[in-house]
Length: 451
Image 1 (tube, helix red, strand yellow):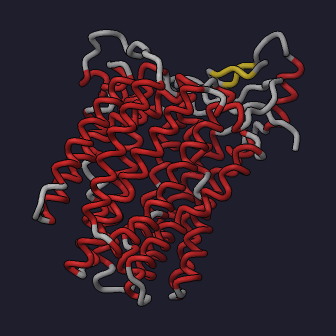
Image 2 (spheres, rainbow, N blue to C red):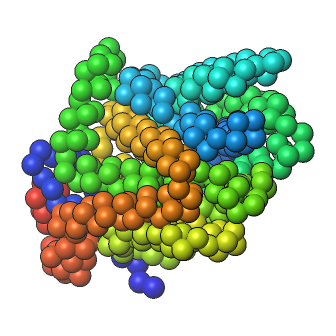
Image 3 (spheres, one colour):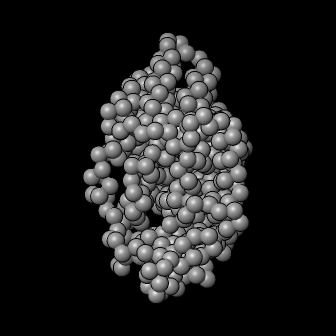
């Protein structure tokens, strides 16, 4: 397959909606190139430890609460407890990763979360207290995630960032698969306390790896930058730029196609399954993306990824409508896996988003985007859990997927009008323009297309 020009979404400019691309003669980066970067290996290892332990603990707590209460609503609320507090943290704490050194922010957040998880291990901890502590752990997570997302672009050059972002997303989904399956087995065999202990230990190990594996960098934003000013500026940037707004909303579609995770326990229960079946449903909702992401990033060029992004978003949600027919466990797992495979469009959205945001506002922008995604998921999980009290969980999943597909159609049409990769300015046209003007860039709107 021929190498396409490298897709790039440049720094935002007021009133500019069109996305530019740049032609590059360099070869396409590979996974080997990305893992050759020592700092990226440290960042990746840290992700495995902290996210893996976190997922195991979250699944364990969800199953524990459902086992004690047999309430789909309470089980969904417990699962949402890992998402809802993200709003405050994402709004008011993410800018710390711009105003302070990003490595230090991640290390401190890891140690704080280890301490909170240690409190969960106290004997006879009530369920409501466990949920409250999970909220507290989640409130500390946004600055960590914002710093990790921002520093990944500091570590990797543009030609390697898409592969790096895909690696991080694949790792996240793989950890969801492993954490879900292991979490279900752990609760079934030894209970939730062991899972919580592992979670606390992984945070400590992650902090150590980050401190030793990443080099110190100064803060990206100017010294003395006010946090409130940074927040207001970030909101104006993300919501005021049409391309960033569409990319962010495409990311937020996860609230629809990840509904099966939030009601996995009652879904499995309706099919006569228990903890293991619940873990399998959650695992298969991520398995498709894990299997397809390497091909999507290494074999599909950046312009094609941008072109497919809208239709894939529609399919990621619309596929779930098949659960309206009440499939059995095996077919349900296949449907969830297919939906997850289409959800790898998020790699293209993430890459375009990070290239359009200036470095000094990158963490705040990621914080806002992640906050909206997490809160949307939490609200969707709670609503789906409430609906599953009165109608079959498969019907709830189908309705959520159908609604998401309608929203995705609107976003796909909007993206088609502004992206040269899918609109009137085709990749062939831009490539011809670039070849004719190799010494002088071609300006499209406020962005340049050149060598």
